[in-house]
Amino acid sequence: MRRLDSSAIISAFELNVSCPNVRAGGIEFCSDSASLATVVSGARAATRRPIFVKLSPVLPNIGETAKTAADSGADGITVVNTIPGLVVDIESRKPRVGFGTGGTSGAGLLPVAVLATHLVRSAVSLPIIGVGGVASATDALQFLIAGASLVGVGTANLRDPRAAERIARDLDRWCNSHGVAAIQNLIGTLEWPS
Image 1 (cartoon, rainbow, N blue to C red):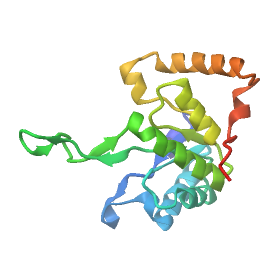
Image 2: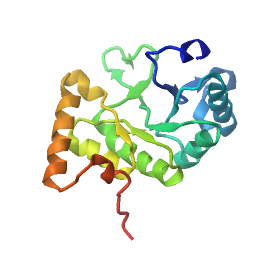
Image 3: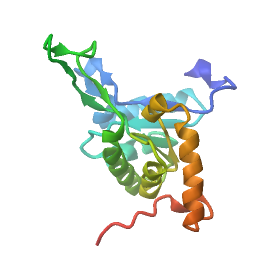
Image 4: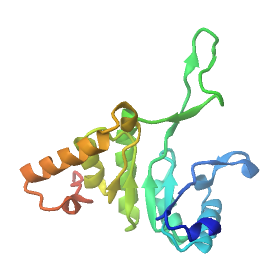
Protein backbone atom coordinates (compact mmCIF):
# COMPACT_ATOMS: atom_id res chain seq x y z
CA MET A 1 0.00 0.00 0.00
CA ARG A 2 2.86 2.39 0.81
CA ARG A 3 4.32 1.95 -2.69
CA LEU A 4 0.95 2.73 -4.26
CA ASP A 5 0.28 5.75 -2.05
CA SER A 6 2.19 8.16 -4.28
CA SER A 7 0.61 6.91 -7.53
CA ALA A 8 -1.31 9.65 -9.31
CA ILE A 9 -3.86 7.18 -10.71
CA ILE A 10 -5.04 5.96 -7.29
CA SER A 11 -7.68 8.07 -5.58
CA ALA A 12 -8.59 5.77 -2.69
CA PHE A 13 -8.25 2.22 -1.37
CA GLU A 14 -11.00 -0.27 -0.59
CA LEU A 15 -10.24 -2.90 2.02
CA ASN A 16 -12.26 -6.05 1.47
CA VAL A 17 -12.32 -7.26 5.07
CA SER A 18 -14.81 -10.02 4.23
CA CYS A 19 -11.85 -12.18 3.23
CA PRO A 20 -10.98 -15.12 5.46
CA ASN A 21 -8.14 -14.77 7.97
CA VAL A 22 -6.39 -18.09 7.36
CA ARG A 23 -4.28 -17.62 10.51
CA ALA A 24 -7.49 -17.51 12.57
CA GLY A 25 -9.17 -20.59 11.13
CA GLY A 26 -10.81 -18.83 8.18
CA ILE A 27 -12.94 -16.33 10.13
CA GLU A 28 -13.58 -13.13 8.15
CA PHE A 29 -11.42 -10.19 9.26
CA CYS A 30 -14.56 -8.11 9.79
CA SER A 31 -16.12 -10.74 12.07
CA ASP A 32 -13.56 -10.06 14.79
CA SER A 33 -13.33 -6.45 15.99
CA ALA A 34 -9.69 -6.77 17.08
CA SER A 35 -8.63 -8.17 13.69
CA LEU A 36 -10.64 -5.51 11.89
CA ALA A 37 -9.08 -2.73 13.95
CA THR A 38 -5.60 -4.10 13.26
CA VAL A 39 -6.17 -4.28 9.49
CA VAL A 40 -7.75 -0.82 9.20
CA SER A 41 -5.28 0.97 11.49
CA GLY A 42 -2.39 -0.73 9.66
CA ALA A 43 -3.74 0.46 6.33
CA ARG A 44 -4.31 3.95 7.75
CA ALA A 45 -0.65 4.10 8.81
CA ALA A 46 0.44 3.10 5.29
CA THR A 47 -1.47 5.68 3.23
CA ARG A 48 -2.68 9.25 3.11
CA ARG A 49 -5.35 8.27 0.58
CA PRO A 50 -8.96 7.69 1.65
CA ILE A 51 -9.73 4.17 2.86
CA PHE A 52 -13.13 2.55 2.36
CA VAL A 53 -13.80 -0.64 4.31
CA LYS A 54 -16.04 -3.17 2.51
CA LEU A 55 -18.23 -5.14 4.91
CA SER A 56 -19.94 -8.50 4.68
CA PRO A 57 -23.75 -8.66 4.58
CA VAL A 58 -23.78 -11.61 6.99
CA LEU A 59 -22.34 -9.77 10.00
CA PRO A 60 -24.48 -10.09 13.12
CA ASN A 61 -24.14 -6.34 13.85
CA ILE A 62 -22.94 -4.48 10.79
CA GLY A 63 -23.44 -1.08 12.45
CA GLU A 64 -21.02 -1.93 15.28
CA THR A 65 -18.55 -3.29 12.75
CA ALA A 66 -18.77 -0.03 10.79
CA LYS A 67 -18.08 1.89 14.03
CA THR A 68 -14.97 -0.22 14.64
CA ALA A 69 -13.76 0.55 11.11
CA ALA A 70 -14.45 4.27 11.60
CA ASP A 71 -12.69 4.35 14.97
CA SER A 72 -9.69 2.59 13.41
CA GLY A 73 -9.21 5.18 10.67
CA ALA A 74 -11.59 4.35 7.82
CA ASP A 75 -12.75 7.30 5.73
CA GLY A 76 -15.82 5.49 4.43
CA ILE A 77 -17.71 2.20 4.37
CA THR A 78 -18.70 0.08 1.37
CA VAL A 79 -21.77 -2.11 1.86
CA VAL A 80 -22.02 -4.89 0.93
CA ASN A 81 -19.81 -7.66 -0.30
CA THR A 82 -21.37 -10.79 -1.80
CA ILE A 83 -23.27 -13.46 0.15
CA PRO A 84 -21.64 -16.91 0.22
CA GLY A 85 -23.41 -19.33 -2.08
CA LEU A 86 -23.17 -22.78 -3.60
CA VAL A 87 -24.19 -24.00 -7.05
CA VAL A 88 -24.27 -27.77 -7.56
CA ASP A 89 -23.69 -29.53 -10.86
CA ILE A 90 -26.49 -32.09 -10.63
CA GLU A 91 -24.78 -34.53 -13.03
CA SER A 92 -21.43 -34.70 -11.23
CA ARG A 93 -22.91 -33.81 -7.83
CA LYS A 94 -19.98 -31.45 -7.28
CA PRO A 95 -19.82 -27.69 -6.77
CA ARG A 96 -19.79 -25.76 -10.05
CA VAL A 97 -17.36 -23.22 -8.63
CA GLY A 98 -13.72 -24.26 -8.46
CA PHE A 99 -13.30 -23.53 -4.75
CA GLY A 100 -16.66 -25.05 -3.81
CA THR A 101 -18.47 -21.89 -2.77
CA GLY A 102 -18.47 -18.38 -4.17
CA GLY A 103 -20.01 -14.98 -3.78
CA THR A 104 -23.63 -14.44 -4.78
CA SER A 105 -24.40 -11.05 -6.28
CA GLY A 106 -27.05 -9.47 -8.44
CA ALA A 107 -30.72 -8.73 -7.85
CA GLY A 108 -31.12 -11.10 -4.89
CA LEU A 109 -28.54 -9.13 -2.93
CA LEU A 110 -30.34 -5.77 -3.29
CA PRO A 111 -32.70 -5.87 -0.27
CA VAL A 112 -29.94 -7.22 1.96
CA ALA A 113 -27.57 -4.46 0.84
CA VAL A 114 -30.16 -1.69 1.23
CA LEU A 115 -30.89 -2.83 4.80
CA ALA A 116 -27.16 -2.97 5.55
CA THR A 117 -26.81 0.58 4.20
CA HIS A 118 -29.55 1.79 6.53
CA LEU A 119 -27.97 0.04 9.52
CA VAL A 120 -24.52 1.45 8.75
CA ARG A 121 -25.93 4.96 8.18
CA SER A 122 -27.63 4.71 11.59
CA ALA A 123 -24.26 3.86 13.19
CA VAL A 124 -21.71 6.14 11.48
CA SER A 125 -21.61 9.47 9.69
CA LEU A 126 -18.88 8.46 7.22
CA PRO A 127 -19.59 8.35 3.48
CA ILE A 128 -21.14 5.04 2.39
CA ILE A 129 -20.82 3.38 -1.00
CA GLY A 130 -23.87 1.18 -1.53
CA VAL A 131 -23.37 -1.85 -3.79
CA GLY A 132 -25.29 -5.01 -4.48
CA GLY A 133 -27.90 -5.68 -7.14
CA VAL A 134 -28.19 -2.20 -8.65
CA ALA A 135 -29.69 -2.51 -12.14
CA SER A 136 -32.04 0.49 -12.33
CA ALA A 137 -32.59 4.02 -11.07
CA THR A 138 -35.14 2.62 -8.61
CA ASP A 139 -32.46 0.36 -7.14
CA ALA A 140 -29.99 3.26 -6.85
CA LEU A 141 -32.64 5.47 -5.24
CA GLN A 142 -33.28 2.84 -2.56
CA PHE A 143 -29.60 2.93 -1.60
CA LEU A 144 -29.51 6.73 -1.52
CA ILE A 145 -32.67 7.03 0.56
CA ALA A 146 -31.32 4.36 2.94
CA GLY A 147 -28.16 6.46 3.44
CA ALA A 148 -25.60 5.74 0.71
CA SER A 149 -23.48 8.65 -0.46
CA LEU A 150 -22.54 6.87 -3.68
CA VAL A 151 -23.94 3.84 -5.48
CA GLY A 152 -21.94 1.25 -7.39
CA VAL A 153 -23.12 -0.79 -10.37
CA GLY A 154 -21.50 -4.20 -10.82
CA THR A 155 -23.31 -7.28 -12.13
CA ALA A 156 -25.70 -5.20 -14.26
CA ASN A 157 -22.70 -3.99 -16.28
CA LEU A 158 -22.05 -7.58 -17.37
CA ARG A 159 -25.49 -7.79 -18.99
CA ASP A 160 -25.53 -4.20 -20.25
CA PRO A 161 -22.23 -2.32 -20.55
CA ARG A 162 -24.21 0.95 -20.64
CA ALA A 163 -26.15 0.19 -17.44
CA ALA A 164 -24.47 2.92 -15.38
CA GLU A 165 -25.13 5.50 -18.09
CA ARG A 166 -28.81 4.47 -18.30
CA ILE A 167 -29.19 4.53 -14.51
CA ALA A 168 -27.67 8.02 -14.27
CA ARG A 169 -29.97 9.30 -17.01
CA ASP A 170 -33.03 7.74 -15.31
CA LEU A 171 -31.98 9.19 -11.93
CA ASP A 172 -31.90 12.65 -13.51
CA ARG A 173 -35.39 12.13 -14.98
CA TRP A 174 -36.74 10.89 -11.63
CA CYS A 175 -35.30 13.87 -9.75
CA ASN A 176 -36.75 16.30 -12.29
CA SER A 177 -40.20 14.70 -12.13
CA HIS A 178 -40.17 14.71 -8.30
CA GLY A 179 -38.84 18.23 -7.81
CA VAL A 180 -35.54 17.08 -6.34
CA ALA A 181 -32.97 19.82 -7.04
CA ALA A 182 -29.93 17.71 -6.14
CA ILE A 183 -29.56 13.96 -5.69
CA GLN A 184 -27.67 14.64 -2.44
CA ASN A 185 -30.96 15.84 -0.95
CA LEU A 186 -32.20 12.24 -0.94
CA ILE A 187 -29.32 10.74 1.07
CA GLY A 188 -30.52 9.22 4.33
CA THR A 189 -34.13 10.40 4.00
CA LEU A 190 -35.67 7.01 4.81
CA GLU A 191 -38.77 7.45 6.95
CA TRP A 192 -38.86 4.42 9.23
CA PRO A 193 -42.35 3.31 10.35
CA SER A 194 -43.23 4.29 13.91
